[in-house]
Image 1: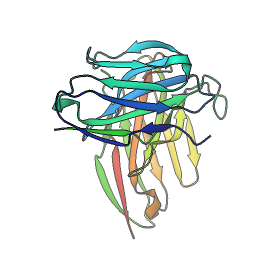
Image 2 (image 1 turned 120 degrees about the vertical axis):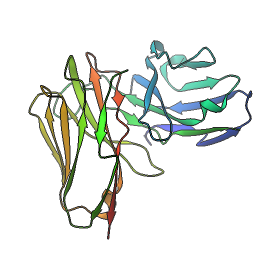
Image 3 (image 1 turned 90 degrees about the vertical axis):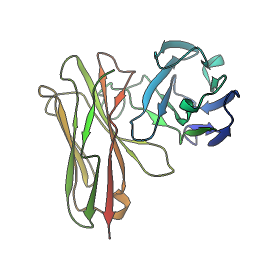
Length: 120
Length: 112
């Protein structure tokens, strides 16, 4: 397994266009997350899947944003009618509900390298 | 939105020197505190997850401590090397293990 893959790594688009990002998580990970990071800020939670079910969406995720995880494998994040304020790094992460390391039970995220969106 | 603060925002360290920096988080309903290292053009990488007050974790020259009662964690780098240059993010989870609130990070630059 090569880790979490995200595609594309960079996307430049004009305002009003639709964009879609794809995330391929670690195959045995049942949880998948999307975070967004803007300049000078830490990553902000957008949404979370356990298997194919989307269990939580942040209020940051307006109705122009939609995320899917068909069959509980890869995930897509689509932004419709992009705005300049959508320019950010979109990070995908995955995790397993199995214990990690010393059995702490805490949920460790494995991140992809991110998809950087620039809206002109 | 949970207020997770990291200090300082950035720091420069001479190679061989040791350094430390802070993450503060809400002390109520604590579940876990994570540290990640994010090198430029790479993925954020997990360093530590701590769940118990008084936890201390170590990975090579990097170590972290946790005080859940007062709501802070320290990350220490001993004998800094150029490869330690990165942004160090802390993240707090409240009440559950799936949603993390991240600080803005401390960017460490190690000068040779």
